[in-house]
Image 1 (cartoon, rainbow, N blue to C red):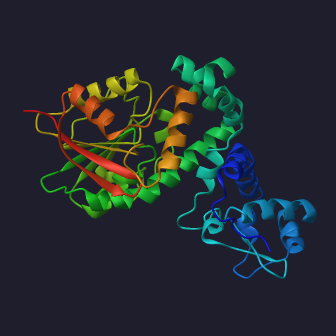
Image 2 (image 1 turned 90 degrees about the vertical axis):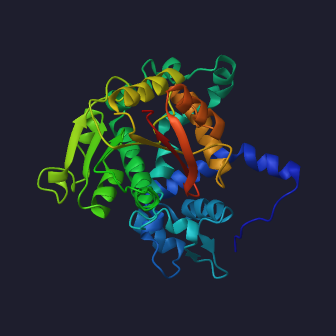
Image 3 (image 1 turned 90 degrees about the horizontal axis):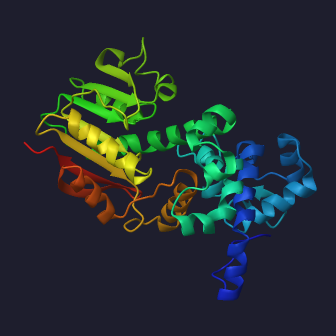
Length: 342
């Protein structure tokens, strides 16, 4: 029976950490094979699981044993395997599924750039373009459509899971229009419109993103008559006026891109408009290991960074916004509530 190891002594822990790639690869393999989807609520033998996912029983057992050591699946005394709370998150049908996020964090390009982290730390810039010869999102859209699909699904998953938290957090009294800037497929604006029937919304993002907007927002959708969809790069222009602007998880590029996006919001907004910036922080969160790892990945792929509370305050202040309350949205996100000065 394979169980989760207790906290090991430092030499053992460091040996485990340097094999972290094996753990990430094992999670990716289980997600791509569909092991969690194939495993029913009752324990299954490796032979039955192998048949379901079209793999070899002996090697599947080795994969499952490695994952069970991490608390992903559990091996029972009779040799069968069963779900744990973490393994269920790899199921595509789980309401809290992290399957596409797990795939996104282990996409093929990540294995090429992680070994160059020392170069990125020395230079302070992304190394992705050195490896692939193209800017990150240009590469995704032109050279890696499968990875682009995984990215879109991962961002949709993340947005869906946080959209209700955002809708529950925000006090929208006196707000008749809201604009979701860089809002992806529009889960946040859709949740707000559903909660506030008299409100109008705008979703702004790149053309290739908004063409796949949430069905509720597209023509014929339940919210279509109360929303405008604007295909635009917020770093170039934001031709939208609204009572409230929401900017969630996009101010993570290089400093120049962040400055341009905030300047465009400031330019578009009327005096007194509210601007709510929602971000993961690397110094004020229960999920420090995740956010600091994502911070390093952002350095590698786009030369960006996750923010500290102070770095976010500095950028908002430099953009001419007046910062009010800063509060948690959920265990992973903080909201910076700002206004445009009158």
